[in-house]
Image 1 (spheres, helix red, strand yellow):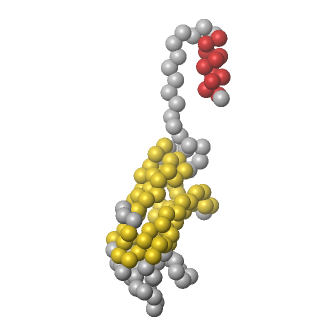
Image 2 (image 1 turned 90 degrees about the horizontal axis):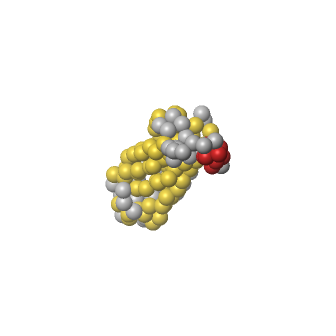
Image 3 (image 1 turned 120 degrees about the horizontal axis):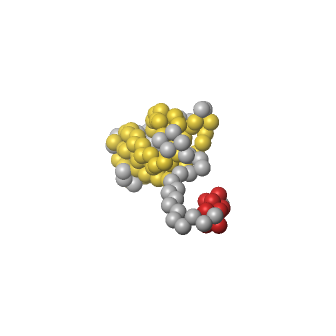
Length: 136
């Protein structure tokens, strides 16, 4: 709206050539992509998560990737502090899948949620959840 008003004002005042460059910057921190390197994993396998996040300004955030929670604790939990730059940012997290059994103390095979949470100054700003599959 502001851009249209400025352009209209410039046109009405007789300016003939107007060059305006607008950055594609979000109003708040946004997660555009949260993916794992594969969809299906076996026990004790390396797993890498890739995140694309956009920020309206440079800011320090805490990013937490956690999940596979069959009991009351997360079997994957990675917490890192990052400095986000204005615009698009790419983050990467690595972990290992838990030991997968058919029960009896391990994690059951099947689908499990993994959640990314982004905190700024201790407040949860945004989150996104994906699902992966564990096999024995």
